[in-house]
Amino acid sequence: MSTVFNKKHLSGDAFINPKDTIKIPAGFPELCVSTFSINIINSFFSEKNSEIIGWLYSSNGKLPIYKIIYKGKEIAIYLSRVGAPACVAAFEEVFAMGARKFVFFGSCGILDKSADRKIIIPVSAIRDEGTSYFYKSPSEDINMNSDAVVVLKRVLNSIKHDYIEGRVWTTDGVYRETVELIQERRSQGCIAVDMECAAMIAAAEYRGASFMEFLFGADNLDCQEWEIRDLAAQGLNLADQYMELALECVINL
Image (cartoon, rainbow, N blue to C red):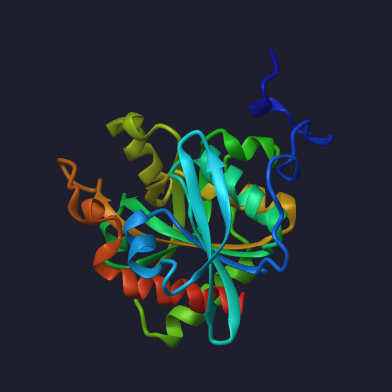
């Protein structure tokens, strides 16, 4: 049996497309920022300081899409659900609404302590998830667009924030990150583990969208026993810095 994980050529239109399921608002911003932390979204955005311009619907409920003005630019903001399939589905719908330049940010697990307390630039991601294989033919990993990496580094240098570049490991199996797998991925040069990066790179490339993602370490896996650390705060500890960085990046993308 030939599954999508073995197909070297992906072609043909989808049977169901985002335009079949959503209402496309007029004048939707080209620039878009998304994060995975509901705490960060709730801390920065409300109907008092931003405008709701659309909704993302699923059986889990509906999520607002906000619009803000930052340095004279209209920017759409929304919460991405955790996990590659849900994350990419929302991206598809927001892309169909009119967004073309995307900056995503979120937490990750640290696989190498050299990445601790730094912004992580995922220059490539191992594809241990399923969604990316519907957008790009099989390969061990996938590279972030080099132009996006240059922009992110330029912005980080301008605000004098520590960062590290490296390979990350994107997995669907959050509770199957075994000791053996962690050691293997670390030996392959992975400095962090996440659940969406590889899929988002593939989907954005397929759709022709500009895409950038940066990560920040939350829990630590480079230790004898798992350290939850900042994971419980869902990015809230340094939320101001992360959001400012994302907004600066998207207007420079």
